[in-house]
Length: 406
Image (tube, rainbow, N blue to C red; front, side):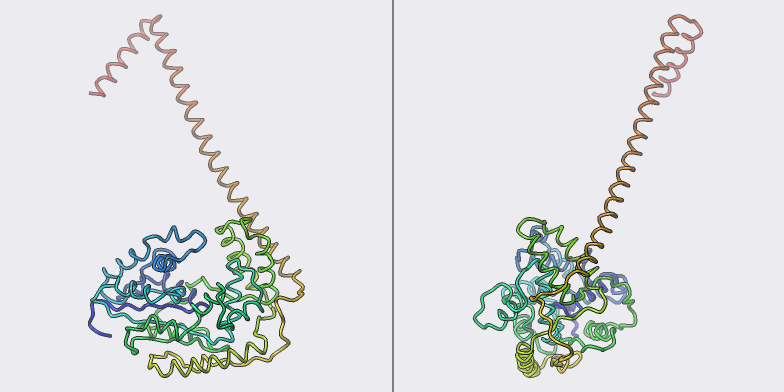
């Protein structure tokens, strides 16, 4: 890396390539990073997400209002740092050429920019992306989704979003148009069965860090996949709670986070969502074209382009999430989780009421004591009218009080 005032590593996706884990690890390792001259400028887990929304002016269930000005604040922190800066969010993959130009120019002329993109093979990415659609309230069926992304003339929102975040050559074509290929780093996600630490080791290599210096256990956020029945359950639930029934912030808390991420994604012995044979053959062929194109560009590949070549899976029968499925067990498990959380929230509310009641009781007691003192004072003043000794005592008290005041 050159002697510029700062080196900026902009990680632009793709979704479902370990991004949630990476961002959580960076957030909880800010002190360790700073000791090594690296800034991860975030005061909350979604700081870079809000900045990306602001950069691209994306609507996002009302969060775009909270995001106003977030990119400019992020860029200001970047310009104030001398050293290495890491920015990371997967929705940056959708940035247009104009958005990219604005982002890169906001870092200042004395910055050396590197583009980082993580990628995983399409046979794993396509089912995962449909599940992400489901977890964001969409109700489109799996086959409809697969048909839309394979239709070159499709103008649907699901197809536009899929290719916006998953078309690796196109995304790098926009972000790296004016960046030398040696400063474009393509991190490939290892194949199934690889050691869990390997992906972090690849990211750390790009960031110029020793992976052993970081405790990966601090990263709690992840975005695990759902099984077939579990995905179908959430999609059917969406049809009941959309259209104003459940507000977006409540959906995020109770459906996406509690039900999907913290409950259904941890079910054991589930049937994993795969591609039907016709779509799998198409994905394998497209992947081959991407590998050839990316290899010809001369990017710095961390891992291997062979990681992007899908391994065809023929284990078990294909289970269609649009078909008739027994959803009893995942539904009961989800209902139990929601009831447990409802009980916890009731306890929290009762605790708050008890605390407020205790404060109210303290306030009432203080008022009673003040009232008692005032009553005693009135009684003493009345006694002074009848008793010379009480009058002398009252006069002495008043003289002492005047002296204390002045």
